Length: 335
Image (tube, rainbow, N blue to C red; front, side, top):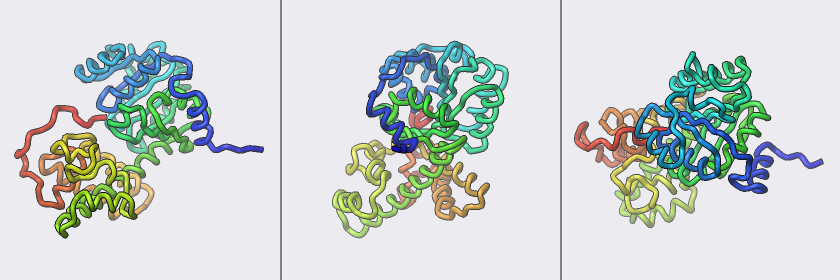
């Protein structure tokens, strides 16, 4: 007998049918920021009918320009939807959107599949799982990795936790936005995978920043050093994508004065989720806690809305005094 893992099944489905080959659906989407906006654009391109809601009029207008139908409330968005996606900044926002008299659980049809792609704390994710199940809904936590560029390109990695049947059904809706859809296990395991992955990412970013500055001060050409590190044991996604020195990696925010692709505030939030989870499981995170302190120093220095790779300024001494630099556009880097 041939036995396939969950990830092999999902990848097999994606390879066989290709993006957009599933039955077209009515999709409700709550949260149209820098991640939700391009993700809904890809859902529209795949042929789905997408109704979106966001408290930001500018975010809603941008989504409408990409084919999303504007809804005036959560209730209006979820009416008649086959699936509801939420992509919100924090656990408190997810709870407020799902719970209460104006929330998703009060107004969606019981056969609507609920998918939360926010990156939030384990406790909030479990609370929504429990409340959804008690109300008769199927719910999965499905956070993503790949950032704004992956959201725009439809190449995100989704980590999907929940009951196996709901995970399989969710995978069909997710595929226009994804390069990888990975079932992680039961409730909250998607969030657990995302939290641990981002912990590793930000530690790698900090070590990359230190290595880059030290290499420069030892007289190494920045491109030569990157060429070496990227094919050696110092390699990482952070080095290949977010290298914090301008003129080396095309996708790096360092090329544009650290205009945000992922803000220091969001990085601080995400690594804080890992630290909170570690404390609840009695797991020491000495390196992670130190990196969190570095992001907090950036925020305290007035650079929280800049890209998280500006952490390099704490190594090379270039961190501007508070108020010395212009703030980027409001909302930059939000999920």
